[in-house]
Length: 338
Image 1 (spheres, rainbow, N blue to C red):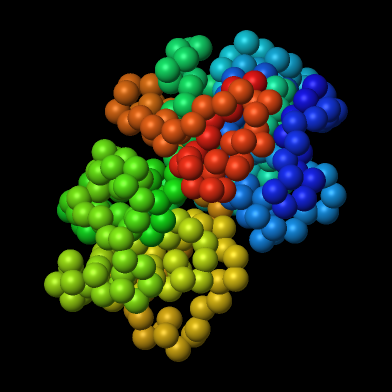
Image 2 (spheres, rainbow, N blue to C red):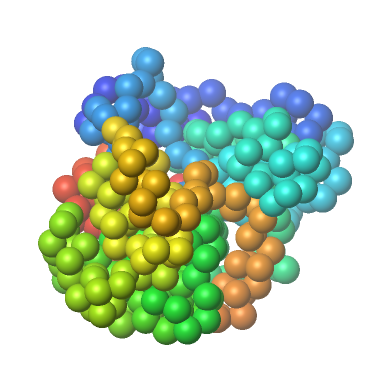
């Protein structure tokens, strides 16, 4: 079997990998229907996150169950399933509280950019769809493995309420699906921060009412101008840089909330400013498993179409080009078909 392996910054290869098999009785092996490149995959690809030798890549997946361990009860061979980027038993205290991405037995998935994938803790990680989906549903269902669930968590963590004003910092796939999530949660005004026409267009399709191209202090000033000097009720931080986090905090009104889901790189908060900001902060790795049943239902009924974030589709053996296209911002998100 061949899969995507990162050897060094900028060096992704489609090469021979060990074929997955059942290791623990709680495992499942699935045949991947579609997978993709995540924005967070670009951190190690760009050298901003070190890798220790050849590293199998990919953590977003959906597909058909091929085999299950003897202890697996909730899914069976032949079912179409979607799983989170973080495994969970869905029974430990953290899972019961709804934070499955902090499961006491969590593993972060990798090796999903391949035709077959072993999924640990299958009962608590995988959710089956009502039936075998049609091909046109596959892109949207794939987003539920990470980016749609992460955008949803950003909106929930930012306490988006009906009639509120929300700002989304970041116009990658997670940011765009944060816009979609805020719309679904009833935000009346959604301000997307974006400089790219194609992404601005999709943000408006997903529900953005305003576009702000300015960044940093200028971006904050523009948000304040649009909100009569007060700031937004909710801000979704979907990037993970120092500038994005500070822009999010400073654009939030006193008593408002920031939901941060961008994987942080070099982010440090100054206590004095945070103290006087009067802003709530909540975020982290999205508990995607908590949202999977609801989001599958929304996609299945045609209520949402998050698969629109995929603007490039390639065969899996062209995975290196998928990374290049996203790194060079020629694509928002690249879908890969084994």
